[in-house]
Structure formats: C-alpha cells, structure tokens
Length: 196
Image (cartoon, rainbow, N blue to C red; front, side, top):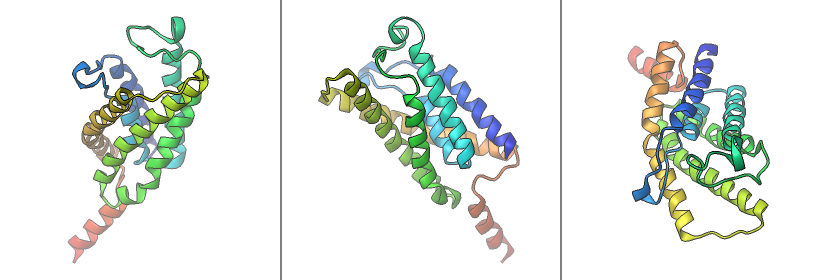
C-alpha cells in the first residue's frame, strides 16, 4: 500500500514534466491534454482518502507554482492565459474537489467497473476548467463566457478523457508490480467463482 501510494506521487510528478512538452491542438479549438489532472484523477480513485489529499496538495501546489513562475504569471510561450490576479493555492482546493468527486464512485471502481471512472474523469476535468474559469473571471471582475471558451473546455475534457484508459492500465500494472490490489471486491468475486 505504501509503495503503491509513493509510486502514484512520483507518477504525478512525472506528469508535470511531460505536461510541459504537450502542445495545444490548434485544429481542435486550442484544446490541450491535461495530463497532470488526468493522472491525479485516475490515481485518486485507486487510493485512500489520506493519499488522495496528499496528491491533491502536491498537484495543486505545483500547478500554482508553475503558473506563478516568471514575469506576469509565467512564461507567455507556455502559459497563454496569464493568471496573475488569482491567489496562490486555489488549485489545491480544485484538485481536492475533483479528488472527492472521484472518491465518490470508488465503490464502483472496486467492483471492477473502471470505465465509469474513465467517463467521470472527463466530467471532472470539465468541472475543473469551469470552476477555474469562473474563479479567474470573478477575481478580474469581468465575467463573460463565450461559445469558443465552452467549446475549448469541452474538447480539452474529451481529449483528456480519451487517455484515461492508458493511465488506468499503467496504474493496474504498477499495482500488480507492487502486489497491491486496487480492485479488492472484483478479486474476491473472481476467487469465489473459481472455487465453485
């Protein structure tokens, strides 16, 4: 359990590195694959609440830290939408909210129904983006929601969700290597069926 939890933390840190090299898809309304959020969401449903909160703190802290680096909220080549007016630490709360959403369907995941978690990851990404956009526009005092922004959030959510089976496959592989069961109820049903 401790080894698996530690590896999920290192996986989240690795996602931050890879995220820097993922381009925006200009042909798909400048949408992105939010790998950091995806790794967090997929990990959040496989771990207990204390580990999920640790992942939320690390993910939110580093997400805000990378946005705050450099002049005016970050390097304009990397961060196209500057967020200098939002307080440091808001992402920790957003990550925590997404984590609790995923923890809510953990019973289904433990029954072996991981595809519900994959679909919920897309919904959670959309809610994350909507909440982040709302916070930023509220702080700036000019709330305007254009059709292009909604489409960009939708395509970002869908693109990110498409890669959730790959992240779940990686987590299942890590759990197997760590001899840790992330689907205990499914395993119990399988062993009962084999004993009959």
